[in-house]
Length: 253
Image (cartoon, rainbow, N blue to C red; front, side, top):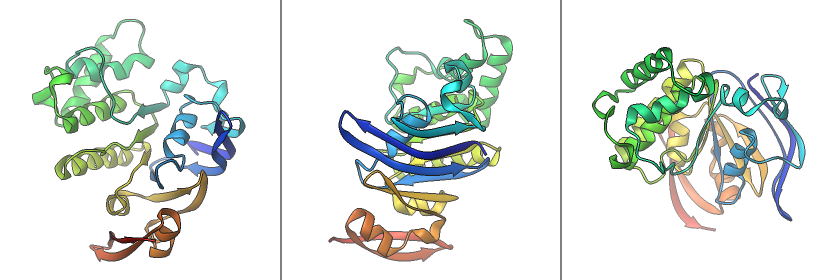
């Protein structure tokens, strides 16, 4: 078990955002968190990564309490890709991905760190971008680089907050293919998403959040018209294509 969460509660000041969250994650799973804006998806990722401290409950990483890890130790296990990640200084792609090795190296990257970075760049098809400045890339290209940085980190658990947000169809598919590749290599990925059709296509498990609580936790079959109506307040039609669901919004309830 890579992750266990028991009775987790979190509030911003007096506003309770997460309420009695219980869930777990196994090695080699792609888990998607879905739910309306404000349902607690991003907050949950930040609690798992220890960016935010829960007021009640327990998070265990590899059977050990989250708070028992140092920042460096936790960064060797968890990689976090936030929404719309930005670079405040203009490194090139190689240097950006090399930053993923920081939890494993001293103040200066060594030859092995550079070899790992070069291998990740090759595996993810980023050779042509390797020495281009990160701030000169398109949104989709930058997102691929940030996922490559997480891959170079060699973390066992990858947290991605809306990684396909504002990307075109091609880059959405490329991003999810990269995530699935990491999962196939034994990593665990927890992703927040809004596109329910993409969620159906790529997820091993789908966790629906409503008002800060886990509404459902299951496979593709949990994406029913009734559950979507209850969580999102929208009537939908469901179609099937190659065994996966296509969700078509019809009207607001």
